[in-house]
Length: 142
Image (cartoon, rainbow, N blue to C red; front, side, top):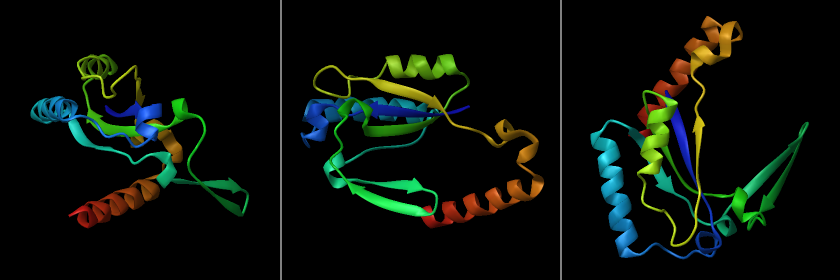
């Protein structure tokens, strides 16, 4: 089972305040533990929404909305992609995480869809296409 672990933004992260050396060291040690356990597949921090944009879709129309975005509690400051044996294992790993912010913070866990989750609608042709796309993406990632 794969999960996206979402570190929610705070007023400080949206203001562009960088973490302390101590927090960077604690998160580095935690990430190293995740990798050694075979859990962490990817992860990064994100710039504040002042450096972001959203694309709104309405039928064929597209509208670009530049950041910052008002609802800090709805924004993402960072993420991991994890491979865990179960939902409970993902929760236990998140509970071990150092507080990613200097004050109160929140981390959200969302399971990632797997091909099997889509049922018969995900035809053999669509599965083959997805496999080709991901193989090419892995080449691009280096």
